[in-house]
Image 1: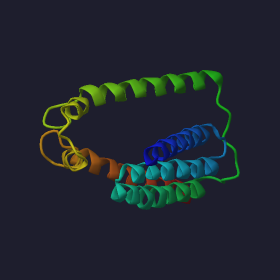
Image 2: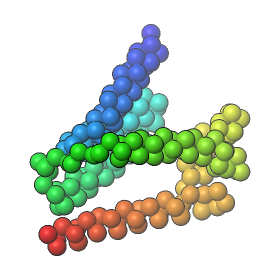
Image 3: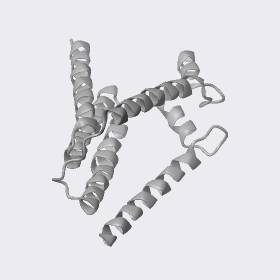
Length: 174
């Protein structure tokens, strides 16, 4: 009985994540989009808790739903009036955006299936072997060894910091 409840909870949370994700990218009010993103991040934390990764779920809530979303809202409030709706996109821009999204998903799929991640194996190859746990994935993702991703991870954090500082500088000029 417990496994049926977990399956039902998973599908309910998956539907909630999908609905709020769609609402976040289709709403014309940017503060509402940030609120919808909050629900998506909280739903992701529920999935982590359901999988038994309590620490990862707590980090999801503390860092992403708490910290990063507060930075987003702070940046929104600094750069524009939250009640102003976004301008309507032209149809050709919607098509180009949709095409770019499909291409990005395809590239991500190829990267996950083919790019060497763990000891020269792709993630799908490593998972098919079966001796892979969350500790090993975390070690390989944040190591500085060959196929490690510590440097790109840190570069992205510096890039986000630069974007925040740039947003504040732009807001000061207004």
